Image (cartoon, rainbow, N blue to C red; front, side, top):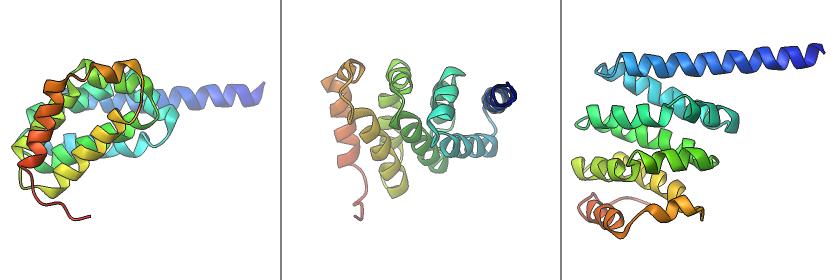
Length: 163
């Protein structure tokens, strides 16, 4: 009885924290520091499979993509957003599907193209793309060759990455 009630209270608390952070991202879309902090927090939380699923359910993937599009000139946000997307995609099929549905692969490629000399953007973007492409679900097959070509072009124009 008490253990179940405590577990339910804990889950409601987690969901409220995620909901509030994502609402904050939406409300402060043009605030660079707020977006950077939110992306970093989401990346930390997404290391837990339960948090990752909740973040996706509350629209976190779309908010991260919106932050990337709004702050396309900010390499730090691009890198942190890619780290977040990699973490959210790692063990959650539904987040990978959402990422594909919102053209996340294209946006990641745009980040690489917009920051051709930023090693951290390219490493983070490759990490996110690896998480998306390393699974064999049918939704991953939706990445058409033209998207892959865009990504390869972005990597060709990028910096020499150290191992």
